[in-house]
Length: 266
Ligand code: ADP
Image (cartoon, rainbow, N blue to C red; front, side, top):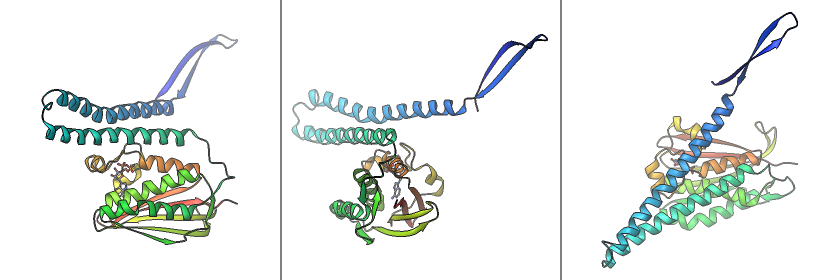
């Protein structure tokens, strides 16, 4: 806790008094700390690939100048590092956009079931390459909600992609869309989209922190998989803008389910 304490003399009529005030500034301090941590994280995440790129440029100009095989190998690594930076900048821009915008205009209606189906089809080749099967179930179209189509597409892309990435070969990602007349947490009608994988699962202590920016359970594995650590933070913000909720259920060795509930609106 932090407090700002100020004291001043005041005239009480029958002599002078001292007025002491205590202002709770904990939230201001915390916001400042979060901002400083974020800038430090971004700098670190950008500096790592940048240092690699600069190092390889030096090597290509010097020791590897006349070695085509080494050049090819280094260019492959440089390409990967440059793409890592590109993904990071792309996710930072998405995050800043969804953080700064107001709630979605309720006039635009999106067919959320068909968005989910289309994302599943788009990711099918990637899943196949990883040896993972995507199974869509439930409603396939005609579930209209007030929302932003591009952003909802991003939510389900991030969730299904994570299921594929962390699920591992031979795994499955089940995507289910169900409409309910009465969702207690929304106090009204809603659509529940569940993305369930058969991957390694996530230990309980990590679950509340997964949607923090740059929080990763296993940094090495996330980077190997091309992750930026921002995917779930973006997902959380978009769902909040849609007045929705997200719950994460996971058990080690049994897989993980991301359960998104969005209001159907009027
Ligand atoms: P990343 O870009 O690292 O995937 P995310 O924000 O999408 O970042 O996810 C944060 C972390 O949560 C990941 O690094 C990973 O450790 C964990 N995670 C996310 N989805 C899953 C999943 N389906 N199964 C296991 N772990 C997951």
